[in-house]
Length: 269
Image 1 (cartoon, rainbow, N blue to C red):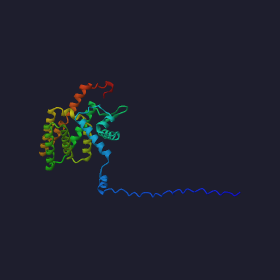
Image 2: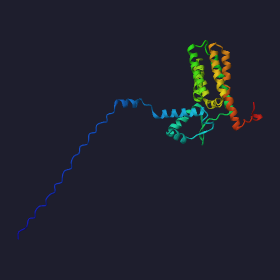
Image 3: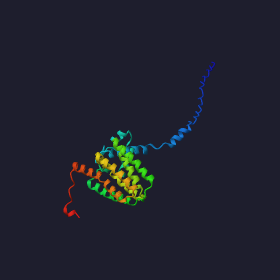
Image 4: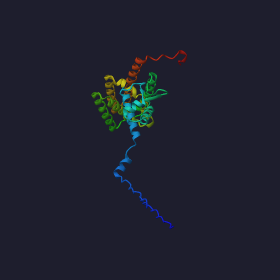
C-alpha cells in the first residue's frame, strides 16, 4: 500500500512592519520684534503690586478707607482681579510706609494713630522742617522759585476744581521742593518718611474748605518769604502750616472713641 504524501501547509507571508521615520519638526520661528518686546516687558507681579499699593494709598489719603478698617486679602483680590501674591506685596509696601499695620489673628488694617502718636509725630516733624528752612541758602535761585510757583498754581487749580487727590499730590510736591532746597539729603529723607506716616490723617483737614484755603495762602506767603530772604517769616509759616491736620484728626478721634484717660499719678513723671 502506497503512502499518500500530504501537501505542505502553505506559509502565510505577513507583511513586514513599515518603518516610520520620525517627523522632522522645524523649530518655530519667532519674530525678532516679539522677542525684543518680551525681553523689554516688565514682570507682571511687581507692576501689579505697585498699582494696588497706589490705589489703596489714595483711598486712605482721601478718607475712603478709615483708620482701623480691615484690609481683607480676598476682597482685594476680587477688587483688583489678581492673586494673593500681588495683594500681600502691596500691603507689605504700605506697611513699610506706616499706612498699614498687621495684627496677629486679624490681618492687615489701615493704621489708626492715637492722638498721642499723632502729637509725637508732628512735634518731630515741626522741628525737622523748621531745621530745613533754617539752613536753606539765601538768596534762592529764580528757577527754584518758579518751580514752587508752578506747583502752587496746580494746587490752587485743584482746590477750585474740588480735585482732592491732586490737592494732596501737588501739596506734597510743593513741600518736597521747598525742603529739598536745604541740601541735606539725610534731613530731606527723614522729613519724607515722617510725612508718609500721617498720610491717612490729611483728609480730616482737607474736608474743610477753610483749611484748604489757609494752606493755599500759606504756600503763597512761603514763596514771598523765599523771594525776600525773610527766614523768620518762613520759620513761622512752617510751624503754622502743620497745625490743621493733627487738630482735625484728634478732634474726630475723640468724638468717635472718647478722650484718652490721663495716666495714674504714680506713672506720671
